[in-house]
Image 1 (cartoon, rainbow, N blue to C red):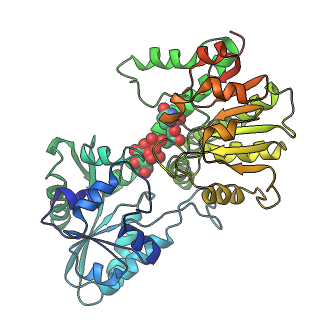
Image 2: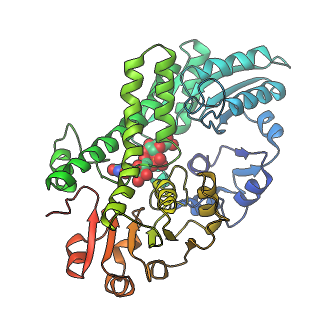
Length: 446
Ligand code: UGA
């Protein structure tokens, strides 16, 4: 919304949320999320044509187009628990829109939702209309990735807009095309029917996640055979039909989207009786869980089959670099497993604060209070590594490429084991400096 406000100074953009703390933060110099370049965009538009408010009703009433961007968490109970999206926030947003609207409004689904949610929104809107309001529902899924959001929004590969084929549906699509068309070339504005748009979002994430699980499955084969997964990815990705992106082997993908969206797709297939299709996509998530477990198993095996009482330094807790987001981060599972092995864990991340780390581990089932002695969050990588038996890199922060490795080596216990879950550290140099390095997708034997 900030990017729309920035690119279209003549439009008034109101971001409304019931959460007062959040809105207060959006109105301050300390935005509630870290995203490179976002501060400048918000600063430029805020107060001009970008407003953050808790007055949700007024915001709906005074707008011609309403983007519904509420959360769609995975259901924790009942039918579809653990897989299906919980649409309660979508439903309450639609009911509120119906209640306060006058005149004609275009309602845009921005949240990622399972196919056919637009029709649920439309049903709620039309059966609860007061004041003679009319509605048109569009689907406009978001494809930005965290850490590169501003660039992804400024220069997107495509903008997808789904709408109804009726004439008022086509008018609504055209109204949204006109907004994006101010800065996005027309040939990148893809218009489809509603269901294609909704499904494309899930499928795009499923394909991206599938690439990572594919290369991660091959990383295990590389470790077993002496091939180097980075070399394999380079050779494979050079085929223009395959392409080089999203072939970086890692300790496992994280983030709020991939697992959730693939599970949504699985649930959707199951609901339509497509068992084999559901099983096929489920394996993308299965391999990811296995990859995280496998990483800790390698650590245990390498450290003479026990981590009990050993000090393990963890560098990086965010699910990827350039974000403070930890949702579904591989680090949560890895740290939980390390603590279950009775290791002491010292964690450093440049952007994630201690409270978030403790809360994430607690939610993963770790009794953080009980582990006061075995869990430490450090403010720099060197104090995390000092006195450690092993170091594990779990996020590919650029600053980890510039570490003073001789200093770390001399401060660690020997043998100084390094487990690089992101292949950001220089393997040959680590060996030369006297570390015992392990990198995902490289054999320990060569
Ligand atoms: C992802 C998609 O890339 C976006 O297009 C989509 O809009 C977004 O989900 C969403 O649905 O909202 P995001 O989760 O922010 O974006 O981050 P990604 O860059 O996709 O990374 C996801 C995870 O995969 C990270 O843990 C990352 O480290 C990992 N990854 C990525 C790898 O392990 N290897 C790779 O080669 C690439």
